[in-house]
Length: 184
Image 1 (spheres, rainbow, N blue to C red):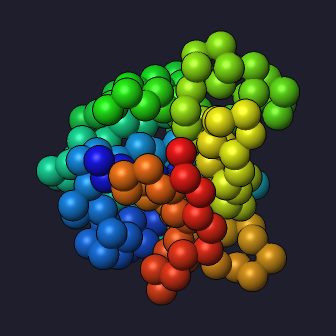
Image 2: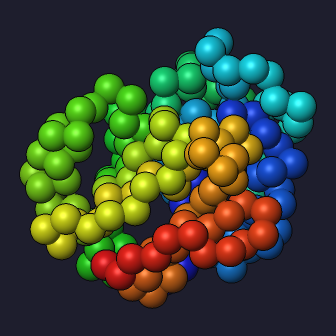
């Protein structure tokens, strides 16, 4: 099993294309934890902002994309994307693993843990903060893949994640360097 995991692309088409071409072409599917096209009113418009191009690239993607709805995703996004943007979360079961993805902007840490336990998740994915997090607690892995193009990390590195076999890695979006790793 090989799953690409990304969040908070915010209309940055070139960054998506770079990550896809380098890391996602061999994935069985891709999970997007929300904020797909729109940059959001609190963010500066990124230099590469091109939501129309990103929508076209996503629509042409030969690999299935499972998307959760972010706080910047709107009904109009669903009208231009040929994949459902699921709200408030996605629930996927693959190879015996239960995976939940939600943007997480409206959940406290306690609510995330309660939801993960309720649905017996092995992997609980959120986005929103633009800062990557990877931790294991009571046999549940909590992942925020960060943002590949609008990072809020102190070092400014854009990030994404992938699940290969039983290992989840958070990677630097440009160099591919593994920044964090955890086993399911």
